Image 1 (spheres, helix red, strand yellow):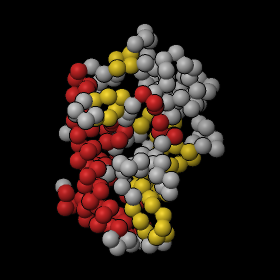
Image 2 (tube, helix red, strand yellow):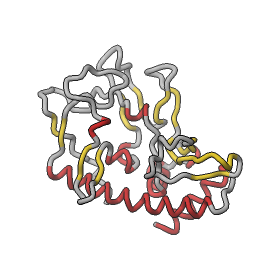
Image 3 (cartoon, rainbow, N blue to C red):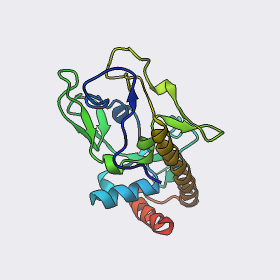
Image 4 (cartoon, rainbow, N blue to C red):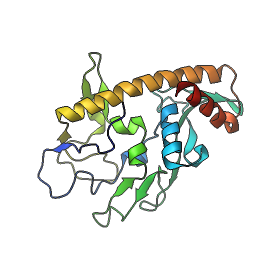
Length: 220
């Protein structure tokens, strides 16, 4: 089950007049590769009426820093020895010249100069990885936050910090995140099977979208 498009905001452990994400510098949308599942691709294409080529790309992952044993690798005939992760395309940032960002991140005023932030241009259709970040399920199916990607409370906000606010989830939010994490596990299993099938006879990158559409039709 996908979380409601009106996702409740986290509970803040500090008083503030603005919403938690009002002045977010969206570092997670700039620093990370966002892996895509077949369901993510299908949802974005259908909801936003755009082509796969408008947002999908392949990320070289020779050092396994993206997949980390969780996301499958795909291989292609033009670079048979290179493992790739299928993810969201990055584009040049106007806020921070010389850097890149998720192509769906809508930038407003520069965070360095004002309280302006950035917003997700496909929030209602965003990938499951984004919906669940930074949470994971432990062996007993309990939700926990990966604290290594959340800055300590009180740390000065900087471009490299991911989320300088301290916050937690309500019981309702935990339930929503747990459902999304379970769905992500299922979708990741499908993606692994998809990679296994593709890698048996790696084809060209230009034919990959047709393969994705075929798998999406079979699993929808």
